Image (cartoon, rainbow, N blue to C red; front, side, top):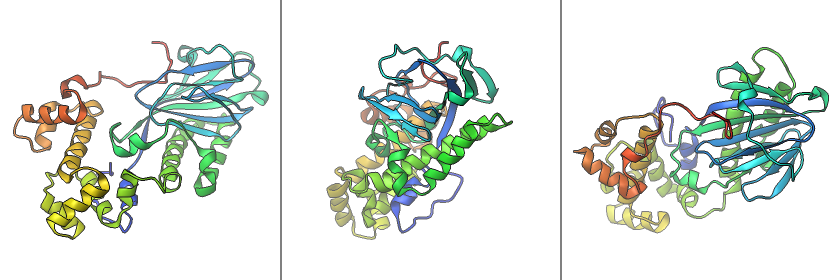
Length: 327
């Protein structure tokens, strides 16, 4: 999960090491000016959804079906890509996002304006699909809630209000490059939401977060995630913790809830799934990079962890755009 362009150097806070390389890559964005009665439905998708609201505001129907009001400056991240909706008011019949009616502004950024929309009284949305550089089975991804709102984290994250102000300013501009700047701000905003949630919102959480926060076990987890290709032995991991092999294995299992060997295998298979689905790496190459003697032995380990054979999870060529977009 760490940025491979920089050498991993453990810090005093393993959680900082685990988050250092977390990023989201924008797949497609759209800026929309809406007026009157409108409602968009966003079906479930593999990528995360991101929405930023400016102008008049709107309503959000969350993955749980509940409605909540969004005002200017609200940013929402749907990390698992769960189905949800945006509307001028609850109860309006939803429609898919009108991608065919959008105008391309620049690479992967579209623009849509509802006919008759008055710029001074419109709701301005900046919506996007984002791809995590983490596998969906990563412990951090599994812990994330279905919906995360920036406004709920502003008290504990001083950078968020400034980013929101910058996005409000760019949303109201028709200057050259405004949409491209918005796309980059959206990427940073989504990462800030996640980081703030980890550092503050789930600070008392048990399980994996508690394990990462443990001074000794956290160093081991950060090292494993930094080098998933390495064929870690229990002895090497015990050396990272600085204790005996038996003492390490007992403490690791007690805090993490599984053996070191099983955890390492899970991390390696999650990395392999990223290589195969995101980078379209050949299965034989993934097996070789992880040190397996044969593609067959790698496939057996992969299926045992992921639940399906690696050949069945390869994504089709091409990206995935905004949800609800007609072909």
